[in-house]
Image (cartoon, rainbow, N blue to C red; front, side, top):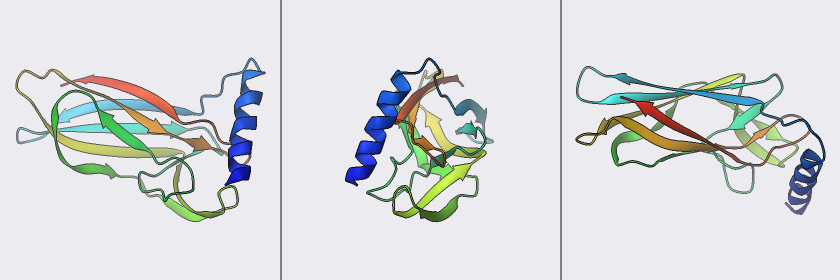
Length: 146
């Protein structure tokens, strides 16, 4: 664990010393209305080759687990689902089994808006790594019209 923290600090320092900003993960958000009064938020992440993000169900002591946070009042119907097939494998970097997504990951959340609500707002926090380094956790905001 100590070596992981040192590696993360070194990665942060070295990333500040270069002009290149790494953004290996891109996100898209959309909302669709269901047949009843509910809606579905779909969040799609696309990773550059050799990069991965980690599951919401990542265990303690490893990479930061992905998390969706909703800022406006919204009635969530169930949990955010991971629609893409996750990869479970032993990670040398974290010295534990991790659950991750490569290339593309799709997440869905069914919700009912409150009266007068015109959008769903929030952010997703995620951590991404390639086979050599990890980037610090990143927040990506979304504000999608209904």
